[in-house]
Image (tube, rainbow, N blue to C red; front, side, top):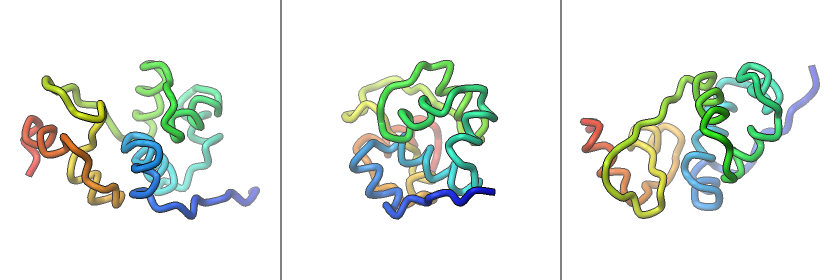
Length: 114
């Protein structure tokens, strides 16, 4: 098995730089000990969209859902504006050391999370 490079950048710093969704996806993939290529294979997509997602660039919804399914994550839609457009629940923010983002409390409240 080839050696794979692990990010030396903490998920919280990645969240500031690339957005919380990118940070959580990258952290969860690493938690599962998957390379980007392995995740892509399991999701049935090319490696490029995985790289784009983890760097905060857009991917299709179909691709996003396929990747999230493999990672055991899911998306919640909530009515109301989130200032930065994307927020993660506080439990994921804590688990992956992603700094609290504006709107996360509103998402948690809407989902009934404490």
